[in-house]
Image (cartoon, rainbow, N blue to C red; front, top):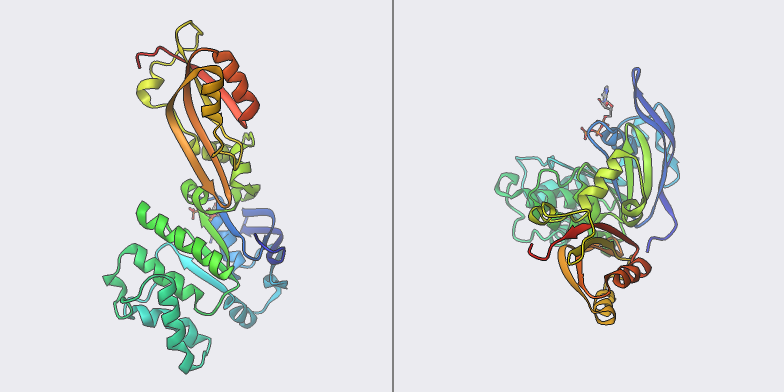
Length: 347
Ligand SMILES: Nc1ncnc2c1ncn2[C@@H]1O[C@H](COP(=O)(O)OP(=O)(O)OP(=O)(O)O)[C@@H](O)[C@H]1O
């Protein structure tokens, strides 16, 4: 659980490029130890916000406090010092091709004038943290995308930052490496208590990774909450609707084609159910089948975890006896139940 101690405080940030408004009145605060995902479509203002957060861009208005120091009013030389407290990882890794893994990771330590005698020990510690033992002397071209990003992470962590900012850090990776990198970042968050902000346009990344999600749309912050809240709070904002749709289980095509909306005897009632948060492992469904002698067919769905919340959504078919009572039971025990229609049992 994050201790309430803000690492980053963003207050009334506005940014324009000439007449073009890129960010409008952005306000949020990030506590030490939090993992926060910032999601938005292309052009929503994510990169601009990220550049402001690390002092590479000065917002036209507002304050960005890193450990209570306002980045907006600092001189360039003060910013150089302050940026050492921010680790950055990038979509395309930004490694120096001519240097080995070891030499890429040691670079920030050399820049920060770490004592030479301590540099090698620190690099080996980082290499082992990110799972790259044995690769010290390889050049980036000899590594996979996932391994390159591990080097990027080790380099970003080298000088013990207070904040790790990840800019589309998994967008260039295949799904397997994406999961491995997100798992590594979660592990680092747990082990070191490091605050992580990840900017992405990928719904799946925030869903699997972030404890808290900020949604940017047309330069405005339109939502700030846990993934659970975001997915279950009705919204008319198209990006949130899309996020909710992408995470919803849908009926398999062949069943969907046979779905009727009229209630005729002998049909299977198809419902979408959302479990109450953190109650997915309770035997609701088996209790229901025993009590009401109702049969269940699972058409789609499963259990998802985000942060420390577990939730589940399923599309099930109800048949047999006492269907109305079973539906009433679900109504009372599920977070949400939605009747989608009916199918004949010959699906
Ligand atoms: N240097 C610049 N000069 C003028 N306009 C800019 C500049 N940088 C960004 N913009 C504009 O500001 C808006 C926000 O851009 P930004 O790159 O922050 O969005 P984004 O969410 O990161 O998009 P993407 O995912 O495509 O990178 C866009 O309309 C963009 O065209």
